[in-house]
Length: 237
Image (cartoon, rainbow, N blue to C red; front, side):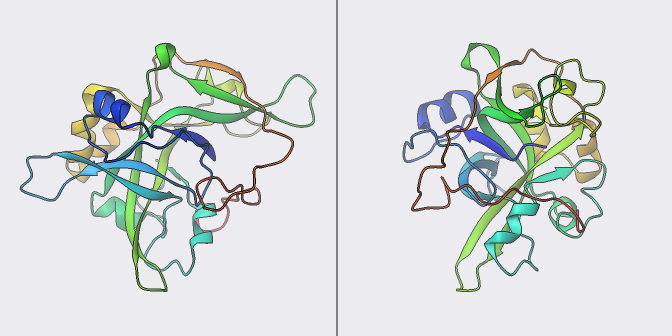
């Protein structure tokens, strides 16, 4: 699973690699569950399948969620069960699919006989960002305002030559679904019954290097930089 990543926030890169216009630039900030980051979806019907970018909460908030903290358990959606689990099935049924633009994905790496994981950064050669398949929802905050939220879709990576090296030994290996740029429009616009055709592990080249966390998380005044307690994905998901 991916619980930490660096989103694409520069408007020139969002336009150049994803074809969407954003009004502002933000400095790249590592994003954790319940953090705010850009995601890409289709505009309303009649717009010619135009892509647009919004900011949303990393961690999907279904209609029945009572608080933002719910997103600490819904940041990844398994492709095998996204159509049936309570937290995700409405977004899937409605075709609310998105692309999550990422500069870097972080995953835990356990060195030989190491008891603790080290965070590693995974990225594409040439500083080309990744477009990760996701689903999204619009959620009404108890105070009345509406927020977008999203989750990354994942597939099994037990046999993936690159990704199987990550996560705890003995655990199932999972990886986010990385989309080929030529598939962006099809992923966003295809009928729901055709979308599982995109549930496949990435076969392109990936690079990785150690990227340990600082000894202390920076104090933050917004959800974008906060580091919550270790996220859990049990029970509902």
